[in-house]
Structure formats: structure tokens, C-alpha cells
Length: 559
Image (cartoon, rainbow, N blue to C red):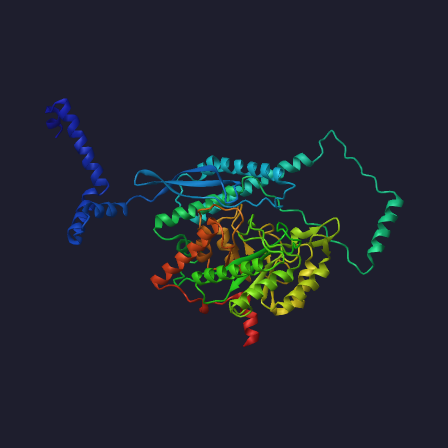
């Protein structure tokens, strides 16, 4: 053979070597066998689109998609505030493709007010800029070459990265706060005897029976850039779902319980009807949200239609009345019109009247939940809750007020954050006095690692900051009691992932806010679409067949 090759010209020898190399390449990669198999199947299938069939055939045999890079960029959320978006790119069939993107909310602890908006805006900009840097540099290098279909491994790497940055931040702060070797700590003198006597006298004035006021717990520190973790985790999950060719809710269901082949159910939508919180035009601060809880068995379309009719009837009643009504110039963060009321009874009476006019059985067909935003109502100078402008109540007085409200308005079956966390005694006391007629729920957004509150039987969960998809799966698998997945006030206008997450996690309730604005209706429409899809596939479990924790105890009493 070598003699034959030597007889060839230099050009022919080069061509001969290329042919041999090509033959070896095809043999090593089993190209002839695959071509023969593809052509055989093509002949028997006889597809109309021959080249499309061959393209699909070889695409299914292509290499597993791997993450080629991440991209982070600044975008604006539904409230016009800066947010960090994570984009995932993968190599698919030897070409780079943008698979998905995600931008979750960032909660910076204390809520933004008119007084601190500038400082909060600067703080948010710093958080977003850090998150974009994390995504573009360290997270990009860390996840390059990783398969997006291994959510557990990706989330573990993301969590480890976050914990390392958190430890670095902690050590840096400790170093800054510790006195330098050349400095001496200044001893703070104790107050003079006269001051001590004055403090003792002030305590006596409060009364011997009144217990001391519990100071506010320190807020949970929010690490700048942490929202990069949650955003990348969700973007990777969406990429994995696209690669698998299944909807995100089915992908998350498979992650949570791969062996569960039962049907799906649609979480009950808790819809915000009214807002009478601190940003509302009236004096009342107590009712951040009055939320409609539909009964089991109603489809998403029925819930939306019923809620819309109820809100329109309330507007008609207000417009026909000389009483204080609604300020139409502004929308609350919850997506509803804020009401100008002075007392909580006014809001509940309005809903009762509207239900009566529409022949809706309040307390039977529909129920109510009150989101009180208790932590935001505390006036620390007076050590009381400002439930209305100029109206203050102690924690014990608030227990009595809630008890009276629940007794008078039996349709109220849930209270969300009636107190701040520090008033643990009042949480327990309220749970005792209202019994099984009403449940207490707590927003776990700001204190996710805090010990459980006494009397609380459910929690509001939000996908924010460094919470990964695997974290959501773990929390919903381990948490005892009712879990509500809630929408944050600042989310992307075109992202409906929250609806898929709620269905995939198998939750009983989802709280999306009011029936206004594109970003909220996108999520409601996604729920409607999922419900129709599951019904057509015959895997939609009727809501009557799954338990509803908010009503479980009351139903047992009636039986």
C-alpha cells in the first residue's frame, strides 16, 4: 500500500490521506450505521416533510445541551424600578442559542416610603449592579459547561457561592467594627442616679400590670447581589424545561417528585378586592388587603368573572353614595384601587352589601382574608400600632379588635400578619380567642429562618433574592401547614413563571393580587391556560378532591 501511495503525486497523496481520515472519522462516529437506520425509518414512515423528519431524527441524537454562558443585564420591573435579569445561553447542535431569561424580585428589608425613597433607590441600584456583575463574571465561569437539566447541582453551586460571599461580607463587617490595635475602647459611663430614678418613675406610670415593650428585632441583612442567585436558578429551570420539551410546571413537578404520576390541580386564586393600607387616601391603615377566597370547585375563569362583577358592584355602590369612595388616580401595589375608609367595618360592610346585591353567599360561596401588614403599623415612639391616622392601639387592644371583627364578620377565615413578630404572646392569645373560626398566616419573606410563631398555621412564600428553585421545592416539601405562594409587588411584566411554579409545587393557594395591570393578568391568564391544557389531557384533578387547609377545620365542625 505504501508503494502505491509513493507512486501518487503529492496532490493525490494529500487527497488519499484526507479520504482515509474521513473514513476513520465516519467509522468512529458510526455515521454509516446511523444514516442507514435513518434512511430505513424514513422510507417506512414516508413523511410529507422528508428533510424535516431527518432534521428531527438527528436532533434527537445530538449531544446534550450545555450552558455556554450567562448574561446579566439591568432591566425595569413592573413598578419602573431597576432589576437584574439573567439570560442562559446553551450550545445546541453546534450553535449557541439563547434559552431563557428570568428576573425575580429583590426585597431589601424595610419598605420604601416617601421619606426614604432616594436612599432606597440608591441601595437598589447597588444591589442590581452587583447582581449583574455576579451573573456576568463568577456565576458565568462557574456554570459554563454545566447541563441545565441538572437543577439540583446548579442550585447547590449557586447556594455555595452565595454562602461564601455572605461569609466574606460578615468577616469584612466584623473587621470594620472591631477596634484597631492602637485604639482603646471608650468606656460609656453609666447614667447618674437621678436619671435612673426618672426611668423607674416612668415605668411605674405605665402600671405594674403592663408588660414591657419588646423592641424590634434586627432586620435580616440582605446581601447586595443576592437576587442574581434566584434569577439564575429560575432561568436555568426554564432552560431545562425547554430542552425537555415540557411546560415549566411539569418540569418542576418532576423535580419535586419524579415518581408522582398522579394528576395536577390548579391552586385556588386568592384575589385582592380592596386596599385600605397606609398608602390609601383614607385614615384607615389596618387593611393592607381585603382578599377574596373562592370556594373549591370553581374554575379560574369563573373566579375572575365573579371577582370582576363584585368589584364593579362595589364601585357602583360607592359612586351612588355620598360617603368617601375610591381615589381613581392611583393604584395600590396590590393592583386594586385604594379605598378612602376610616374604619375596617366600612370595607367589610361594602363587600357584604355588594355580595348581597349579586346574590353571592358571603361566608358560603366565598370567604375573606385580611392582610393587616402589622409590622408596618408599629409606631415605636408610642409603642403602639397606628391602625388609623391618629388612632393607636396596643397589641392587647388589637387582639380584642380582631376578635370582634372575626366574630361580627364570620366570612373572614384568615388573618395575614396581624402583628409584628416580636408580639409573640399576642399571636398566641389571638389564636386562642378566635379558635378554629379563623387561621393566622405569616409572611415569611423577611424572616425565612426565624422560628415559627405561636398560633400560626400557614405562611406566605415569595420567590425573592437568593431563594433557588430547589429551595422552593424543599420548603414546600418540609413545611407544615398551609402554604401560599405570593406575587411580589415588583416583578417583570411579561413573566408568568409564578403560575407555573405554584402548579408544579402542588400548592393549594396562590396570591397574585388584584385584577388590574398587565403583569398580574399575565399570571392569571397563564393559570387559565394551564387549567385548559390539563383538562384537555385528562390529568386535571377536580378541586373537590383535594383538601383545602384554610377550610379543613371548619368543615369538620359542620359535619
